[in-house]
Length: 191
Image 1 (cartoon, helix red, strand yellow):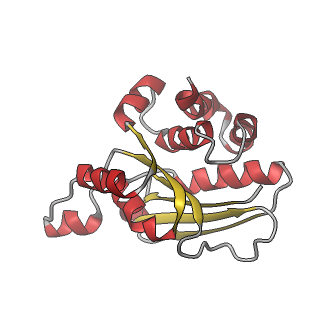
Image 2: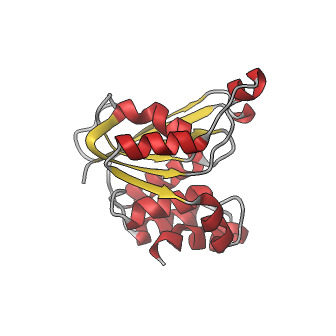
């Protein structure tokens, strides 16, 4: 298996945890994994993105432009920002819930996540848009969007890992009191 992934969002959305879950799941299968994270002003709502490269023949953790098989966007504008990295036949899994960027909030600028989703629909042939509020309501917890998006990529086949792989990573990395909720979020797209 060879997969090149990018996860992107803003600080506080669980992008780094999702990256660690994917890496742990791949390593448990014996696959080589290289990853790199860029955490800007993450604690202030700044951009956060992770490059994950899984498989043989990978010598750098960073994806080149036009190389990513999958982008998982926790925030629509961040997914749009990462599009130059996507392969022409790559897939994007994105949340429809926007987070107003710090720059727009400070300048009083207008930010409409719907416009970003519309752009993605017009630009990306292989797109999965997750209705965040509905998914979170059905799972019953407001802070598991990262696992819901991982599950969406898992169940559409674009992640290249199995449900058992990711469930094992959740068992290893998520505190016991939060595991059941996170597993329910992971499996939401497969129900």
